Every structure is written in C-alpha cells, then in structure tokens.
Image (cartoon, rainbow, N blue to C red; front, side, top):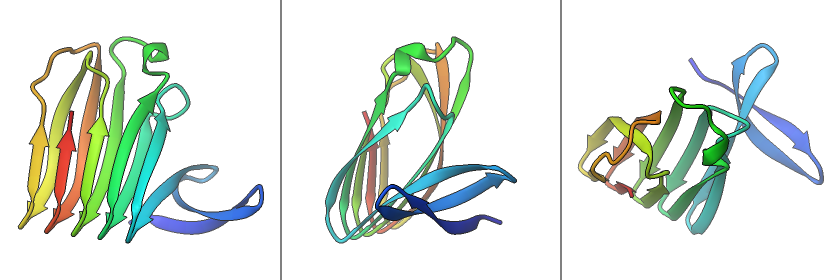
Length: 130
C-alpha cells in the first residue's frame, strides 16, 4: 500500500510517496500536457513518474556516480499518454511493466554495470525506454 502526502517544498507543495517512516520520494506527475523530468541517480535509487493523457520525457542525471552492481527501481504509471525514458546505456533494463491495451518498447541491453528494474502500469498508452 502506497501512502501519499503533500509536503511543503520552497514555494509550492509536492506530492510524495512515503517509502519508510522518514524516507520519501517525490512523485512527478504530468496530467494533460508535456513535461521533462530529471531523476538524480546519485541521490535516490527509486523514482516514480506518472502521466495521464500527457507526454513525459525522463532523463537520468549523475548516472556515472552510481557504484557498479547497484540496483535502481523506476516506477511508471502511464494512462492514455506517452513516456520516454532515457536510461544510461551501461545499465541493464529489467521490464516488469503491466500493459493493458498499450505498448512497451525497451532498447536492447547494452550494459550491466547497474540494474534498472522498471515496474508499473501502462493503460492505453506507450512507454519507450531508449
């Protein structure tokens, strides 16, 4: 069960998912529009992105700072939209996405330095990992 909350952050409130008692991750949402999101691989090994009737481009930053052999998790929810994940090329991609009336396209694995486990759901949308 995911627990969500709003947290004050600078001049706005952000939606967060509680991972543990004092640990959380921001949930980046794209409803009805286009957005680019940046996941800092050196700070968190878990990222969560949601798109509803929109388009999201996701980029990993600081991937070269992640130690070899580490596992990262990426959770995606895509409903009637499109998501493109620009994964580091030396990372192995493991697909655990549930797809209903949609499409999931994942590039061929070209590396195995870090494992990226991609989980989530796509309903009537498209997810592409390049």
